[in-house]
Image (cartoon, rainbow over all chains, first blue to last red):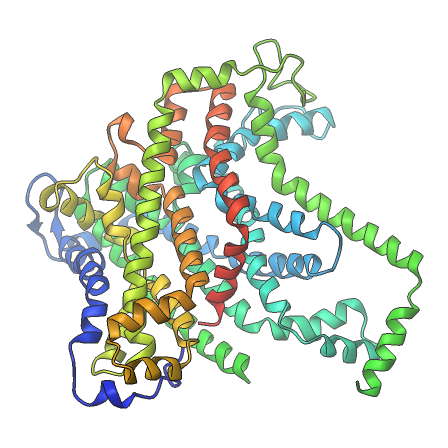
Length: 305
Length: 291
């Protein structure tokens, strides 16, 4: 996002400083102050205390952070959250491909586009429950695999530690493809037809045409989706909550950072410790975002050319 | 038309009709396969929900269609859970959040797009920062605020108030406002209109489609929000649909027919809503990227 193109001041408003802009901004700033800025400050303080939400916090210095370093579950949650970021490149590749396919002028294409968007509006709890049912021990997936003779005993999909996270990631990808492909589709529709014609004349195959024309043209969208889907991946909670029936999975196999934060704060009443987890998440997200914003600026600069 | 384009046109026309039809059939196959993958979990849920006691839901091979379709599972859910309350609560929260978001974001976006004043950059960066911070980080202090300060724990305002402002929406509307010609605003100023008047009677009507997109997006996000509502809502009758739905697992344990009915009940209203307002989603998502 750039501020270089700020509108020129009009003579009537710039003559002297007025309160007007601040009056317009006030509701937003007050609410952000109460519900974002204050809580971040409070979380920093709580992270230095022993706090169970009921009794007043007791200052303990860096004890919670020292405990975090020793906590195997936290380390696991950290690893899981980073592994979860793998959904981002997969989502980008698949939704760009889908956007290219649905950009064709085929009869009824609007119906297909709408269908692909359905998971994005259905709500994570509803789709999570439907997946839990598919992957149940006696669910559809096992039933099909057994009838095809692929397996003889039903697989405990969601009770097998190595499978919980991949299934949750698959769910995130499945639910996101239609959503993100709408963004890419909008980008594709701005690509001048002449570029494709030129590529065709140069003898480009269908695949080359998209590789050399569509993908570069979609750069701003790719960066944007990369940013929002990776931030979403770092925050994943609902999928894990439903798929593991609010346990986080056998041996914490599905526990992510936000899930662990929730578990410590609201299941075990360790608000101080949970706040330390929150700070760790904040640091990771900020670090990640600095990288992202850089990429975004670069993407925008190239997109504006 | 350049020579290249003419040649390209000839090449395109040269493709025989039959081979094009064959290729289209291939694409339809791909599209349909993708549609089946997308829709199947919902379809399976629905089919499970209308199966009676004599129909198999766990057989090998799977039984797809019920021999005796029934609504008894729906009646059971209806009798066990205050579904109507869930629905009304969700609607209240999502409508209020959507409308208030548009109002607050439209107010904040105007000076950011159309005025120059000291501190503008600072506001801009504060907004950007709040965009990055995951909301879940704030839930512990927000929980304590809800209980000790606002005293709205277990009420609907607890879901609305913290979600009235979204930096993302402000940026989206700022983008739309920047598209409004400055000449129009200057002309109004010369005619003696104040900034509030200009905001209300000139800027807002022009960006109405963007306002609608923001309202609808926020509505759906709020409708599907789960974590914060699950922390705030305690009384069954006061729950929203996702929170009630998550509680369903507790009520029906392994009665998948009823769980499936519950899921279907919650998905249908938002799908109908989506069908009606579909085009705004596309507009909203497309507009978001220009950032």
